[in-house]
Amino acid sequence: MPAPRLLDELLRQLRARGGGRDADADVRALVDWLGRQLGAEVALIDRAGEVEVATARLAPDLLAGVRPVLARLSGGHLAAVAAQVGAVHVRCEALGRQVPRPVLVVAGPAPLTRESLELASHVGAMVEVVRRARQTDDLALRYQQAAARLRLAVFMALMTGEPTLARRMTAGAVPPLLDAERLRVHLLRCPPADRGRLIDAHQDASGYHGPALMVRCPVYDDHVIGLLPLDPGGGDGADAGLAAHLRALVRDNPHYALGISAPVPLPGTARAYDQARHALAVARHTPERIADHRGRPPLAGLLPRRPALAWARAFLAPVGAAPQLTLDITGLALHFPRSGVARLLDVSRNTVTAHLRRVEHALGLDLQDPRDRADLALALAVTDLPPPDAPPDGATVAESGAGPTVDALLSTEAAVTWARGFLEPLRTGADRTVRRTLRAWIEAGTDAQRTARDLGISRATVRAHLCTAERLLARSLLAPGPGIHELVHAFRAADRADRAP
Image (cartoon, rainbow, N blue to C red):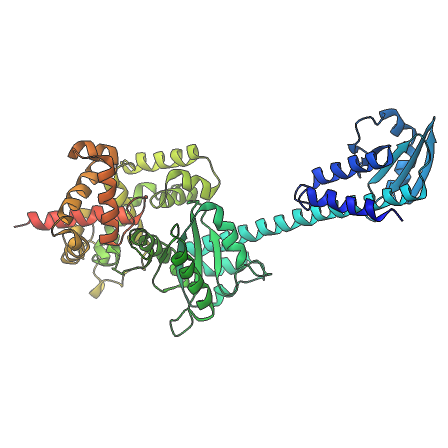
């Protein structure tokens, strides 16, 4: 048995290296340490028969002299062999049980003493422990990555309104969330470095988060998306603990903010996510940094159903035969920056731009213009709604007055009432200045620098007004998405009503 002093020193070597956080460096440190203790040259031969680590003065031809022995050791036919190559005494010992096995080689001018043999065996065992720890860490990392990809896939299926597809994707390991009838989306803003820690803290052995699901946002690096189920009574149910924990995190950390959607059915996850984005925009500008969505019905559902559908179908007809990828990219680009769409779909930004150019050419739009983006978003939202009832008495679409322009739809009483309610928070006092900035910002294509130049104010003032508008309107405006589309349509509908006789 090696002296306790040497064994203690061996353990100190590992602790000094950080406890296995860098397995390759740990193995090299052990091999070098063993060589110094024995006054010998040491090499570790990997499973493929190649030198993985060796001390500096090990002669290459020395290993060539014991190559047949190394093959038998690696193949599991022998456990250890002592040999002599010229004047050098060589000791070879196989490590572990999995064939092919790595081999530890010690070469010196004299045979190893019993204590030296035992020390070499201890170091060999330690090397194998370090290697297995590395393999375990690699497997754990791959499992975490696979679990994260599966959670993201389930979330994306729910975002497309496909809970059944989400169930099929889990291959029998169905998360409890998919058995819920309704959920809320909790959108947490936090430093990017905190995301993994927060998600891992609540992950269970199945790779999910109990009854909930937490995913890293694939577009915004500082967002964590939480899908929390509701019990039949409308409460947070089994996930009340996670909801309370997220709120506590925000209260205790000034760099965090939380937006919470209204309860929605599982297929309405995309709507809940948009609500949570709007709520997060409000939360960022409040002392509590927590906000629930203040509900206001979307414009698409308030327009006269049959005329709106006829307009939307005519508007979108030129891209009716476009590839599905083009349509998917277009829909996502109305909600996220183009770089985020590229990351979300794992395509290049140039690919995203190419698909959007085809849509622009087909529809005659400029998708950098917020007004064109808003019209396209409205048309897509209208076609996503359930089909209208059949016209009474066998009337046709034409006989029902279908096919108006978007201006005609925005002139309806429902649209004007919606627009005035939307803009009401901007009608008094200093908020009228914010309203003026918002108008100029839309006219400038949502370019803050152009807006500042047009109004003769600073860019910082423009941004401050946008932040105020987010809080007053309860809508996200600083990132592409439905908040800007609603603002465009609200101004348009209100202006037409104000100009009407």
